[in-house]
Length: 331
Image (cartoon, rainbow, N blue to C red; front, side):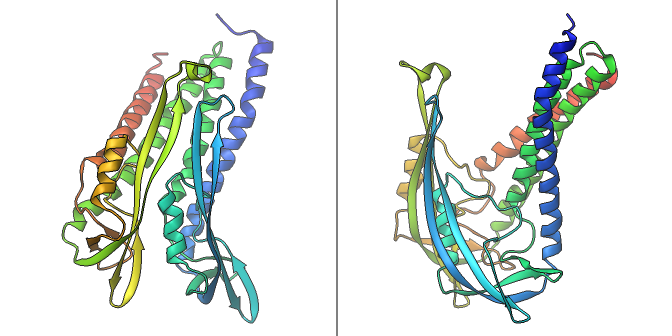
């Protein structure tokens, strides 16, 4: 049954903001990736940390189905270029504003205490644009990845509105499949990096360290029936830690337990990790000789590292399957 013309128009109108937002997020994300590549060639300037604290905010969905606490690190650097004073709160291009993992914010506070001397890398064409951590960071993939989700939502609308047009319908199908294939490729790339680092860490040198932070963060979600009474509430638990260690007289901090680690799971899993790494306990730290700030407590590529590439592989195969069927005209 073909949708009526006024319904098709309404659907397309409703889909336009999703498509526009998805395209903007994707373009912004690609721009951040480009800037991160350029930043490795930026000149550097001495800087001082003037703000360093952690804030938290709890949120709950209006229907009561979800609740979570997000933690953010507020870090600010002051620096001078050619006698002019500047400040920046950008650690790296594409940085996220918060995380439900409390150790992420605490780690930044420890790495950048107030009064610490460090460097920032500034754009010579615009010295007000500067970062403390040049180069690529995993957070860079979140913005373009989110953009692809909004584009996928618009593709659904295109599928509906173009049901009476074979060409439009196939174009929507192709866009839908492309989004899932792209997300799969991004996930596989990130998962492959984690597995490669895990395998390499087996041969890294070791040093003694100490657990300086440990907390179990919990987030709740409830089924749609749970907006009223009798709903099933599910709670995910993440065991998060920070440890310090010294290399060549310099103190480093890390929250990497193992590469590809899960962010949250069941209570027993989180409590087992917390019991293995109580605050103040001494631990063995494996660190990269090329980049001592890259460290891990459990070297190797364990089962946790398989979750992301596994899910990404399913997304890639699904997307490729949709593209193949669209090409064959099977829809």
